[in-house]
Length: 233
Image (cartoon, rainbow, N blue to C red; front, side, top):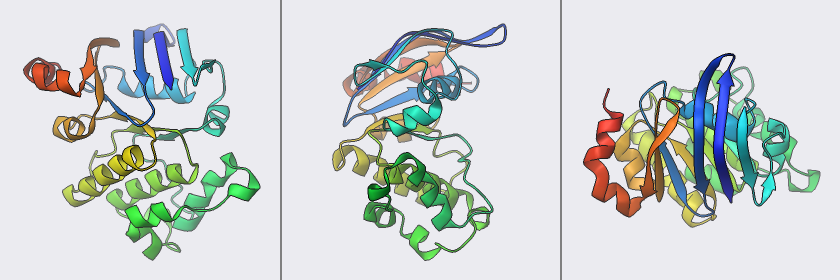
């Protein structure tokens, strides 16, 4: 579904990604793990078109999308929930959700029932401003907004950061639902290892802009001690 090959990315003279290769499959969760500052968010920006790559390729459903804009990638079915959520604080919950209509043809512009089934608090707060929601509710709103796009791939950058445990469980259930019931591919950046471990079908560990470990769910069980060393500050 998504294939990255020898991906490099720079910020000026500083190189943030060094030859990253990974795949994300339909109906699977790929977890990207690593300490702060190792390139995880840079990788998400590269996938979604938020930052231009310096080299390598990004292929989506067989087509090279490495030079396409973020908007065009969204129209092709790649949704992004960035670190910090980036909801519109002065718009209502309804308006935040409807902002995702921009990627859809007019006949498909509706909020799926699954958004409110997974996050019922959003239905209760449809007319509240996004900025009035708690951090956890804003995270639910950001994921719900991405779901409105009806994507084939959901890219989540640290969805549990600063979130209370009860909402972390809701987010985990939503991710599993999207994988198992919708067949969506998910790329999940996470520092909370136990959360990622319980969800991931595949994983890649970054350090200093490079992939230092990669494997399947079974590999996580066999290599957990080594993997945790890469995550320890």
